[in-house]
Amino acid sequence: MKKIINTTNAPAPIGPYSQAVIANGFLFASGQVAINPENGELNISTLEEETHQVMRNIKAVLLEADYTFDDIVKTTIFLSDMNLFAAVNEVYGSYFASAYPARETIAVKGLPKGVNVEISITAFKA
Image (cartoon, rainbow, N blue to C red):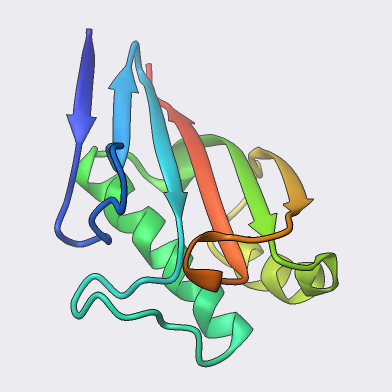
């Protein structure tokens, strides 16, 4: 059985998908970009602020599903340019205390709405 997760504290999906789905203790969250859910505007004033907005959006989905950053087992980071890696990595790392999740980081040709960062996560709770 699966449970669909949606919250108004994260951006509404911009296509035919859910913010997240829980199945057998796993939370599969769709990629988040730096859309401010309060006004629907992109929050891309700096790369650091863009990354913080992405992580706040992930946190909102986690909270709605009753999960935390400690429950994340895998992340995927999509970047518009691999030269952004260090700055994004610094902000991303500040959201985890220890026992970092597995991860890959991929540079892609383009991301939704022309953003620089998109992050998806998988979390698990027994």
